[in-house]
Image 1 (cartoon, rainbow, N blue to C red):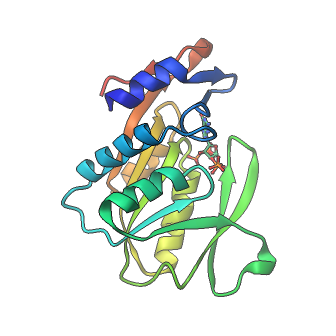
Image 2: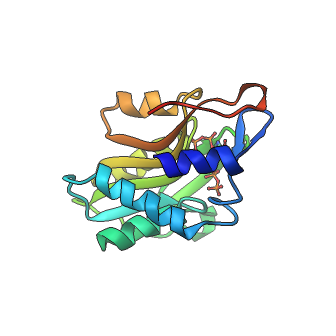
Length: 190
Ligand code: G4P
């Protein structure tokens, strides 16, 4: 998606270790106009897919997810990074964050993810796909169906995209980072 790619090149910053900082327009300060355009693009890419619920994970997935939910007029559920003591009536899974080198317990209420739900997962980054794997597990536990996964930015040099697509899931990313070597942002020409 051209508008996002242009913005990454203009305002994205590289950090050592292959981290792209986009907190000027996606995950700290947010640009709602760009968010809306990205949500419109997701709606276009998942047109024809039967969806009744948008799922994301806190925190940075919430903004793009709610934009998609708004456009499709569907409920948006965010999985919480939660503490064991609060887990009643919850579906629970573990997610290892490679970037933060930390394992989170994430959970979602059984009231909001149910058998028969047709779920579109939306998130900001697809890197190692650990968040995505956790979502697959939660959706499976709920006996719901994961009909697609949409990411704002995919890092092609990490293995999440390949791993998720191999499962047969319809995965869409609006911008794909080919490399951040030498702190230079190289975008894939898609
Ligand atoms: P994954 O999300 O594909 O599983 O990969 P990984 O374990 O590497 O990601 C851990 C966290 O770091 C995720 O956020 C993910 O969105 C974020 N992340 C991964 N690569 C980058 C990057 O290059 N830049 C930025 N800004 N973030 C990246 P999270 O732990 O869910 O935290 P939150 O920010 O959503 O609260």
